[in-house]
Image (tube, rainbow, N blue to C red; front, side, top):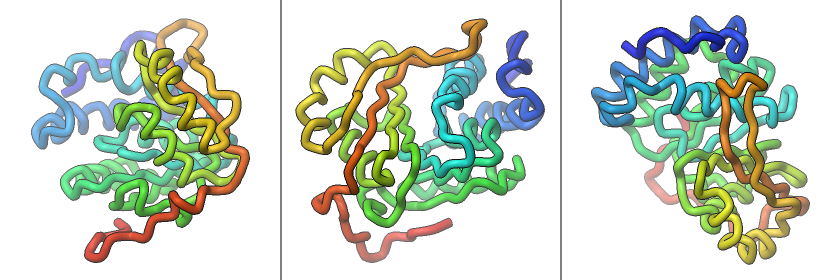
Length: 226
């Protein structure tokens, strides 16, 4: 079991808190047992994972389409689905055991606003167009930028959760971002006024359509859906 949420969590999750508690238990139980999270993470799920991911919810467009790449155990995608019931959430994950866990979580939590795509991000380029693309612990920013850009609608926004490495990664990624036509790339701190939910992210906007070179064909034999 993941333990009780920290005091003040209701101010972050509101009416979604009971389902967030259930999700935390799924992470601490099957998630750890199947190796999606390390055993040490079970005791710090709320501060390090759920509340950290909840911090980016205010950046999401109301009622928009959010694409979460490399979803793994569902962070931040499932957290955003709990907090933003009017948004459409696409979880992109290539590993079967992770997809199975995501499907179980979505069913258990009753998340009607979530779809799961078993694929690599580059295989969906030009086939998925999100208003916002999120990623957490997926790849260095210079590589991640290209993966995200291929899944954005024109004018869409990338929110990459990076923590203390955000500034240095953004500096190294500037040339790659320029090639993609990304604008306004910056590091920002987001979170609740109490500081309970906080995150450091890199955000940028891609103003033109998806680059042709990113429109990869899906590999044969890959499952493309749930």
